[in-house]
Length: 98
Image (cartoon, one colour):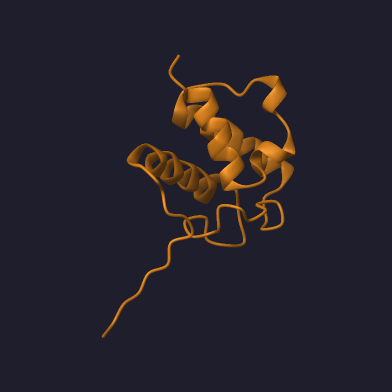
């Protein structure tokens, strides 16, 4: 019996993997997606896959809790939360070490 697995993204380093895992867990728990948050492609439109403005707010709050930061007003727009790739970019920007 042969098993094969397909990963939606291939993290380039363990830090990114940790971010991706955390983002996907938040999405699984809060986004109410019509697809599996653990395997959805990183460039898939989350709003087209079931996320609403209300669940988007829940995702934002859960991400703030998971990563211990607050999204600035300039990032509170639909495009930031539209894809996993966009969410990852925002999280990385907000968690950069100065």
